[in-house]
Image 1 (cartoon, rainbow, N blue to C red):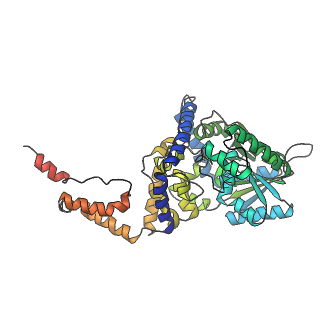
Image 2 (cartoon, rainbow, N blue to C red):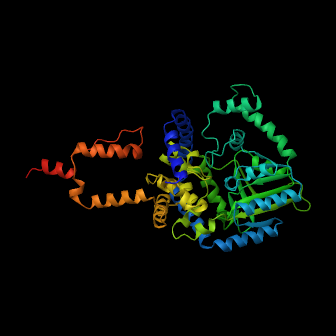
Image 3 (cartoon, one colour):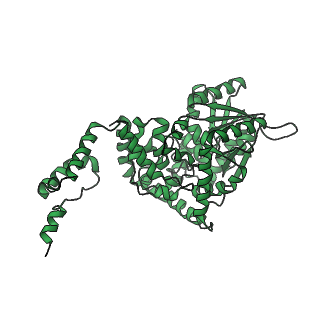
Length: 458
């Protein structure tokens, strides 16, 4: 068992039995459940909408290269510069070059999981550039020195009391401040950063091929502010974010909002088609779009798991996953958590180190059921398990155990061997490690076949 796998198991055990953590997550998730149920009820035929969204995303994967090239051609014509980055190192190198060329000292950044993936803030700290998160949830976890807990709700693990205490310690705000008071404090603080920043960084919810536009959806207006004041705008987007047409947004944006937050549509939906043009008063002087691969092409080459690239990052699979609800986001120790993270992380970061995530699932299918683009996530987890075993990443103890299990299951005499007392002694000693010390292992009775013969009446 790898160190990362051992850490995952120990953290899962600790977090699952942290009652205060479970109380906070249960409360925040309950609000999500209520909002999403209301949002879904607005659809006359939700399944049809999901099927159409799935078709659009599948169409992209069937014509991946042509849509990306179409986007590059059109956004370049609009005045932006496209940069192709093989991995996070290339992306950061290009960003640093832009920063040096333009003498940037302060960066404001809107919420983006892709920037988390390439460790953008850490890289900025290395070259002594201040990078400020402008999404309220992201700002909270940045102040706390933490990573986003959830791909949509970064500070889901914190209660309002936790945030009030954090801000009192860091900024000396009044103890016990209300959420409204803390929001107003952050708003005023960030206004100063927006006005002073030379560079604004955003992610992309979608890249629209036919008009060469970057679609960003949000609820706070922070992405708009991050691109309105600075003279340079950098977009960092995974290549899977491409969609064929502008008209596709009329279907995808509401589905993203409903499954992400329960809204009919997010408060702010912006299309960035390029830098400020001659005669225009608003917008940045320069715009760069970094198209990040970072092993996405390798994932695309997989016969089965390529379907995970259809994901629109709504977070619905996380919110509906019984495992995520119990062990939380940090336990995964990866940028992307929950079912979608368990599918893609082994391919983005290495199967050998992250294969255990694909086994951390009950395969109940709730993730597949909740996906707005109909990705069969529970099946993809099984394919990951298959590939991990074929690659020889299973530890020897596991191989021996599975062989012993197979041998026993194929022979009735071995299944019936031993009396109940001996059986319980054997499974309890082995099960305490596998089952966990916080649960009682079920008491084994006589085998079913013996009970059947004993009670059979002819």
